[in-house]
Image 1 (cartoon, helix red, strand yellow):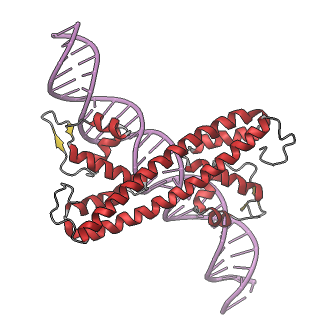
Image 2: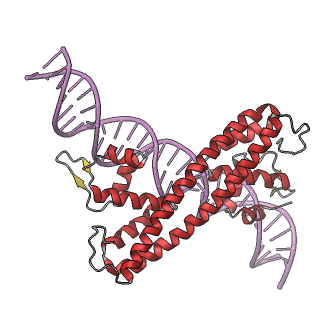
Length: 130
Length: 130
DNA sequence: TACTTGATTAGAGTTACTCTAAGTCAATAG
DNA sequence: CTATTGACTTAGAGTAACTCTAATCAAGTA
């Protein structure tokens, strides 16, 4: 059994976010202890893993909720769920491509800055002062 | 010379976002035509490239504004700018790592769904119905 | 001249948190 | 036995970065 804090620590998110996901019903059949505190089990942990993965693709809370609800409906929804995951895979692959481009740009900037700092570039001809 | 629409198309962002970046003064010395319409030149294009890269690292508009202002101050700020870019590089590398993990998770899910669809898994023992 | 197109602005709305205030409960300290 | 501490609860306000809407205006076309 895990507390809100445990989940926050485990997944590197804020405790606020943990409660928010619960309030949005992304964690099905969430339990409470006798003091009304949220308590999580290993299945909830798996839900958090899936949810955070889908969030990292940029999927909205609402869309994730729909996916979770599909999961709860059982095997009949496997095809629909597969389609959702395939779409998210495309999105994540696009993101990887974009991020790699951004990384290349940052490296280009760093090279430029190093050249300036080492005096290899004397005159700044670039209008951005770089 | 480019219009708001040109920039939006070129960088795959909304026209609203283009105007928003201008309003936040991320594009220094932005010009207007005689009808008060924003017009962009090739230097502005370079600013957009840099800005969008930094945004893709998750840098806030405010932080980007500070970076832009440093750029405008000239060579004395190269060290400070280099530090900023190095930080963003670390962040982007972390993001790449996280996204690759998410991708692996999606692939795992897809394998599972395919197994179910091809009848390789008969009994659903996993409590998530997967 | 009237209409359409495309731009402008201010400001309201949205998402996904993030933070704050006020309150509950159990355990420890005096 | 009370007092305080600390960890949790809630509702709701605040925030960032857009996103959208409505009203306005200028230029071009029928």
